[in-house]
Image 1 (cartoon, one colour):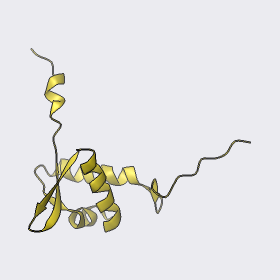
Image 2 (cartoon, helix red, strand yellow; image 1 turned 135 degrees about the horizontal axis):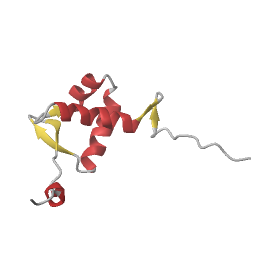
Image 3 (cartoon, one colour; image 1 turned 90 degrees about the horizontal axis):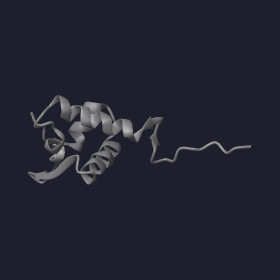
Image 4 (cartoon, helix red, strand yellow; image 1 turned 90 degrees about the vertical axis):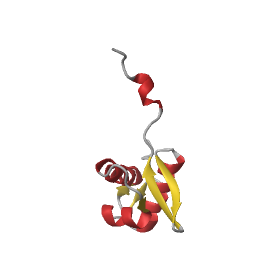
Amino acid sequence: MKAIPVKSVTETINGTSESLVRIEILTIFHRNPGLLATSAYLAEATGRDLATVDRQAKKLADLRILEMVEVNGKTCYRYLAPSGLSRFRRKR
């Protein structure tokens, strides 16, 4: 009999995949170019709890997808455009 894999607490939160939360955060930045947002703003915009959004925004910053900056003593995030993308564009 095969064991059925069980998702860990870090993979799901109340039935929601943490990767889905990261996708929702990135969607907000995609729809709002130049946005500088706190975790509280992102939590309200996604309808997710602050602790989850804060953890996932930090993970995106660790992956260099978002940049973490201090503004008036608050931690904010902004989207970092991929710098190496131009290497892959075709030259005409």
